[in-house]
Length: 188
Image 1 (tube, rainbow, N blue to C red):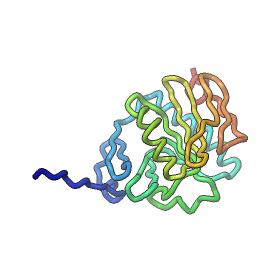
Image 2 (spheres, helix red, strand yellow; image 1 turned 180 degrees about the vertical axis):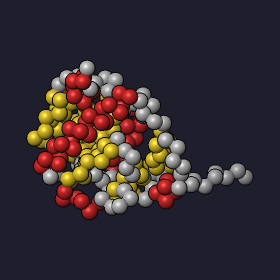
Image 3 (cartoon, one colour; image 1 turned 45 degrees about the vertical axis):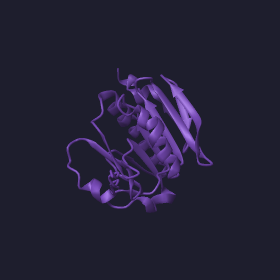
């Protein structure tokens, strides 16, 4: 009689024991996910959006912006590393010395050819399940920002911007995001 091997469920403690080899390690419901380093258009978008958000958040004392690598423990068996995240001042308690423990107010994923499907499908479902209020996806190949907000457990698109448009999206209703600046076009 052949039996199925027992499924190994990994935890955050298993994750922090992994080597520091420039790969990005995450755990989705106990299963290890590995992603290689990102490309230049990805890094440009992350860096430029971070600068925009940090300036806005600090000027208004709204909370904290973090970039990868920053572990977010949605549960003991679901640990993600969004490209960028925001925790509001009122939710400061989820910021602990080694990681974020709980759902940030906003997570941002910048799509790469190797991660686009995971970011659109798997991570979207995980973020909704663990009550991340706002989820933005930046696609530097299509020059597009899609912002979604959680509504009764499901993400609904609340804003979209392309190319050099300006976008306003929750949780920052007073911030206009110039996409040309995000893509780095203003530096050319």
